[in-house]
Image (cartoon, rainbow, N blue to C red; front, side, top):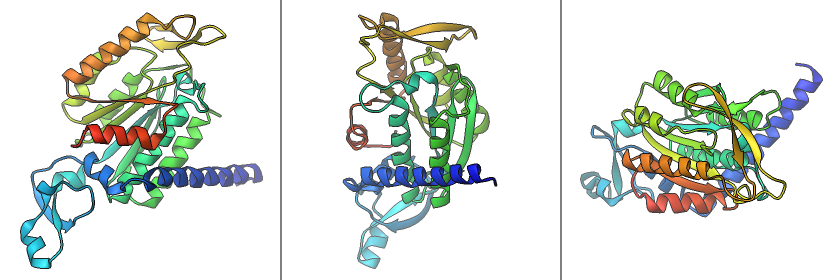
Length: 297
């Protein structure tokens, strides 16, 4: 490894450590296991019992083991332990917009890192899928701290956008990758601004196999830009590229209609939905989400 490459690797490792520390701080005021218990699926095949941790639902308490050992235990089901969680993150140009101190992509990276820390702390497996106009990188689901550093390094490396030549966003490439590569039933967190084109009709292919939550990240300053509208390329369902606008003197009505339709379709198909603003702290928005959805999404 040459000296520049070594320096770059050292700097990336430092950034990974800073992101891990930030994610752990986000969880410090909350109970990590509380997140994890709501991320898991609800399996039917009993596997084992484990000690109760704060946030576990009372209905899962194993009363026989609890009475025998004198401390609370809960039942763990096979499907829960084997259902991986996949974080899908959009790294396209529109995600790099930010007028509130950080970009939408920086917000997505912090959310993904916080979820990953919580998931892995609970002993579950988590993977990562990064996309833009193509599939950028896939990190298969795994566990342990090495997996955490692998995920964080991938997020930071591509979020900086140094070597990635990306023109537009196409969430359908992520949906296809999930359907083709993620054969096992999974919990999917899909982080994007869903700005570049409509993916509402494609969501029906995900719901059949996976439990999906869409996290739409927005920046409150992009609706009204003093310098005029910013245009990004978006892919249409027919494969053609078209310019999509953010900002201007008035919000783009087509964007609003597209978002409203996406929300309607998500609700009709029991797909989870979370609005995440770059102006809101990550602990606050995650607490709001999991408070609203007491059960696994």
